Image 1 (spheres, one colour):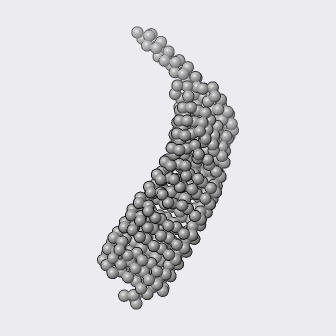
Image 2 (cartoon, rainbow, N blue to C red):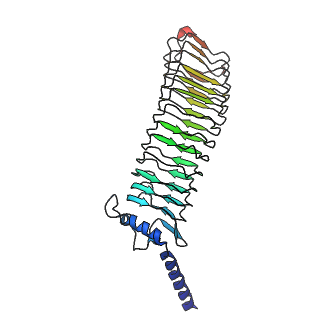
Image 3 (cartoon, rainbow, N blue to C red):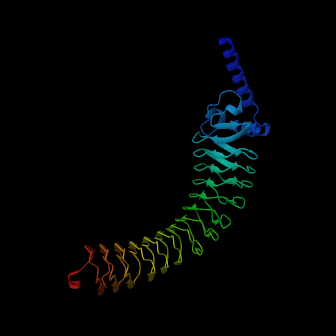
Length: 355
């Protein structure tokens, strides 16, 4: 009985080894080509991965099922060179973040769902024919363009900290989160992205942006762009709007009932209006050029910062939850209206004559 058990164990071991060695020839060739390339810290990529032997199916970070690679996890190994993982029919997940790759090709991988190639030196990425792709992270690379025509199921896209001047995600109708901060974007197209919840596009060169139809949008960050005007209208889910450090002279929010925070200091605002934003809680319009401002009858407004404007008239009447009001640097203010503000406890920049 003991001898039989030993024979069975040996058979299973040899069977597993045989199965591992039956990796597709085309996949083995692609892996072999990349692993033989020089690594960033010396040696080759196989050595950087501490690979033992020549069986690519047992390479660290590579998962194989039924003779095909299904997952690759090569995070943070100082890998370098051009990685081509095209035509891996069973590949579902790739994580090669934190390396020094210069190019990445994953074309024609019909089952690929997740790709993380952030924090590399990528200047080109090809993802054509990856129609199952849902999560794509390419932040902190050197990309100047990305083609998303073959990614209809994409829900998460992070391309922050690259060098792109244009980005079009209008075909990504399932996109929920887009981070394209810290690029050189002059043109951003998010039309038709009716499922988009988070749009982070700060630190770019955007002067115009069409946001109509983004009924699911909850968080908007357009900090440090070149916007001159911005109108947020009929956006029922919008909760936060970070729009500081632009060149805006006009801003309006209308029919945004979920809107909580508007952060718009360091602009050139002369016009600022909010209507039908019943849940508004925080407004910061410090360091602008406003002369008049009305923020009355807002039941949940708690904090207002209008410091360093040119205000003559400020109306915050009947804001029962208003607690903090910063008026500093408005030396022309002669008409301050606070009737019905029974919770107001902190007023910064009040002079004796106002009382």
